[in-house]
Amino acid sequence: MAVKERIFRLLLAKKELTRQEIAANLSLSMPTTLQNVTELTEEAILEECGAVGAASGRKAKKLRLRPLAGCTLGVNIALHQVEFVLADLLGQVRRSQSIPLRFCDELDWYLRLQNALADFLQGAENVVGAGLSFPGIINMQANQIVRSHIFGLSTRRYPSRPSSPTMPTAPVSQRRTRAGTALSISP
Image 1 (spheres, rainbow, N blue to C red):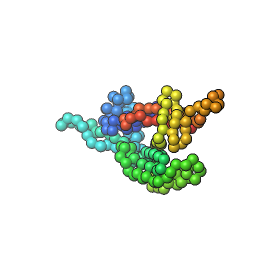
Image 2 (tube, rainbow, N blue to C red):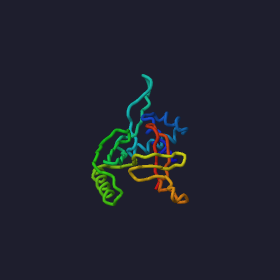
Image 3 (cartoon, one colour):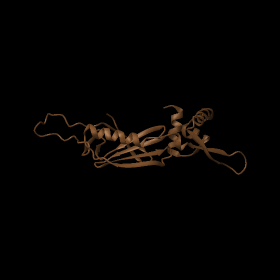
Image 4 (spheres, rainbow, N blue to C red):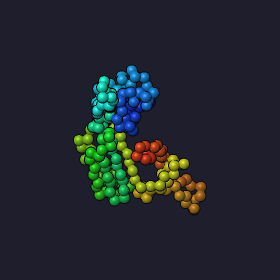
């Protein structure tokens, strides 16, 4: 992982740190830290947000992610509605919307979802990540969505054809986050 990405992820988790704290947390030299922090600041991804230190002498400046340097999109698909959320890099919700849209596995539903999402994202700049959620049961050992009534997914075998393959499933990966567990679905 590149140094700038490591700094970005560290500040995403820790919120505010000095250059010295960044170097210590990532086991980087100060010249490497200063070079990368300067580049991230010039790219308007980081900003100074205060100072810490003794009453006399030069105070260390705290850095944080610039909230509007990017935003993340959340989409929650429920049986009768879809919810959209746009948050800044500090996790503050900037915009949200819920629309009535009963799930139906037909082209028209997907087109309506696409149009609603496009409308919601009007004026949004620099979407750097997205997450999708829907009701379902996950088998983490098998890395699969094993059941979702919304999408009609099930791994249940049919007794009349014991040698038949299971119904479609989707591979899932898991990672720990500050807020809990994040799941990623692979096509």
